[in-house]
Amino acid sequence: MDTLYKLIRPILFSLRPEDAHNITLSLLKYGRYPDKRTEHHSILYNEVFGRHFNNPIGLAAGFDKNASAIKNLYKIGFGFIEVGTVTPKPQPGNPKPRLFRLTEDHGIINRLGFNNCGVEKFRQNISKFRREHNNILGINIGKNKDAEDAIGDYLGNYKNLSSLADYLVINISSPNTPGLRELQNTENLEKLLGSITDYRNDQNDKTPILLKVAPDLSDNELNNIADISIHYGIDGIIATNTTITRPTDLKSANKNEIGGLSGGPLRELSNKVIESIYRHTKGSIPIIGVGGVSSGQDAYQKIRLGASLVQIYSALIFEGPDVLTVILKDLKYLLEKDGFQGLKEAVGVDVAI
Image 1 (cartoon, helix red, strand yellow):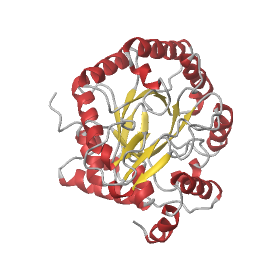
Image 2: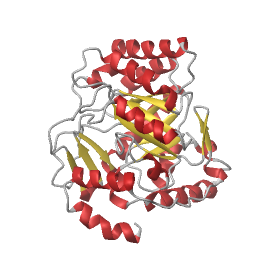
Image 3: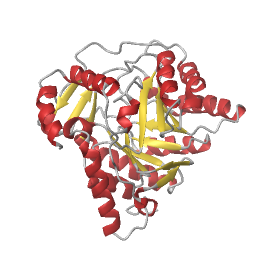
Image 4: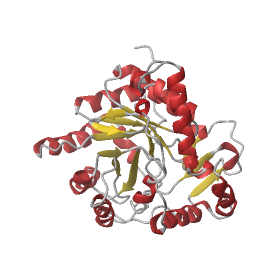
């Protein structure tokens, strides 16, 4: 943890989590920051979805829901950033309080409910960023809570945003929007993916489409989702979203709050999903691993289990922006120690297929 964040963190942690987050975003949006001099190392490069990533560590969706602070977030040194989740219409999300720290467990519980500014303002924010920058940017899309036509919401978002995205993520796995996870069922998923990929093909659009899955699925359910994804030409899977389960060893006072649990307590569950998908698909579909990554070893473990890229979120809250530098440094060391010439060589080496 860097010295400046050590000074700031007690102040931020004295505030309600959502207030602290909003203040942080405002500082990132309006502040002036020097570029983080993250060293580029060829061993950390990877090419995924036809995109070249200088390093494999990205910022997960949910941190910058409205794409309002992208420019300064990139200065931290991320290899890529994913913004959203965005819905067609603005919506306030669920009643407050809806965000809780589990400090003793390095975890977070949220029941935010896709609070966001809506696709029109969101598109304006990204367009402004794109006029000056070409960093790799993922866009995470969802449906409005009151949507009568869920497929229409996703398809509309795709049409509005695909030209601005390096990849688009279909988020059907948040536990905080009623009925959303039902879209992971076979019939619903086939209709959704079929509609979006048919439109993409008709437009000769090459924007990669990824699917973000829940960690609370059986191996059979995961296998089915992976098979459907491959059938419809989905370009990758993000594993995973937050979990509605609760490990028995949680220590924090907020451990029983309703919502999705992320951070350290999600790590092993996320790893199991990554491994399951990689084994079933024999590595044929790229995976972005997310859940409980706060060290180079955590990232390396996900890569060895099948992740081509890795995202962080909670670690940024608990450790501050310098955690990224530490993760990249340690990941480079681990790859070199084990004799790999490049990150791609390490993907899935711990999975028998």
